Image 1 (tube, rainbow, N blue to C red):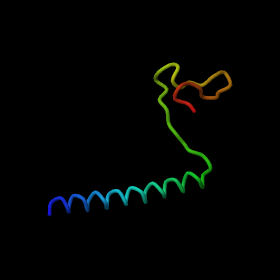
Image 2: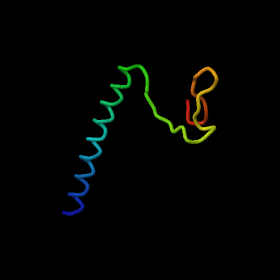
Image 3: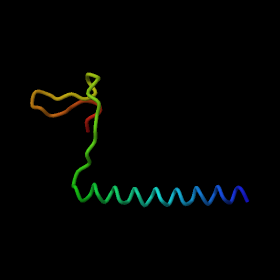
Image 4: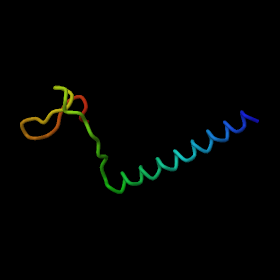
Length: 60
């Protein structure tokens, strides 16, 4: 009985997470771009260059 309840709870949680992810993906597609944040605390990972464009390991 206990295993059935745990399995059911995990199934519901997995289905709910998939629905939330689909809504987020639809929002990103409608916007046309993905907004991401990076930390600026470490040199070489994320910093603006002379043209004002961000570059480094954390910038895609």
